[in-house]
Length: 172
Ligand code: AMP
Image (cartoon, rainbow, N blue to C red; front, side):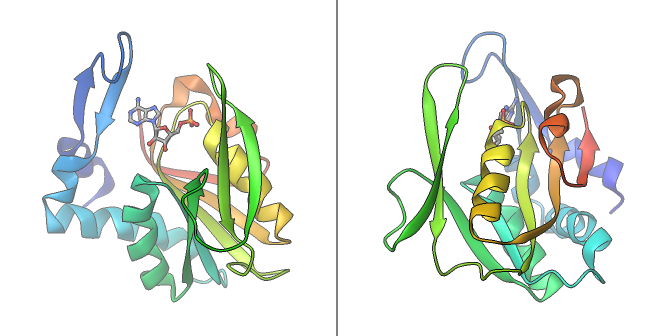
């Protein structure tokens, strides 16, 4: 399935989770195996020959795409989670939200110094979450090859926050 055809499986939900936000709902895509396969292919294909050793999936929808991408690339999957969810020792990065702060964490033994990693999430909006994850990867000594997203909300300029190559399958 070609990338643009995936858009028919993204549902637009106005005013969720609050007024003024147009939520891009990926759950219809999860219902369609061919679309999921196409999405994972499109996310993974630019990185097939780039020696990716770890894929960092960002909680929680980033896990859904990170897992098949890691499989396709023959890489290990790392869970990047919000504060307090991971059981083992973690690296942590705090970052600013529109209102308040949040924290991303990953296990200290999930990425080794110098490993080549790809960061994956379903969607980039302001780029705050991905920028914090990038900082987390650098804290662990990783070499971040790129960040890949299924969806980019281009008007928000999130990719400008990331000083590594950024790839988005679908742009809105
Ligand atoms: P940001 O840190 O602003 O780039 O936000 C990225 C995270 O928030 C992603 O993990 C998305 O899953 C979620 N997100 C932000 N805006 C939207 C939106 N309009 N529709 C769906 N998910 C969104």
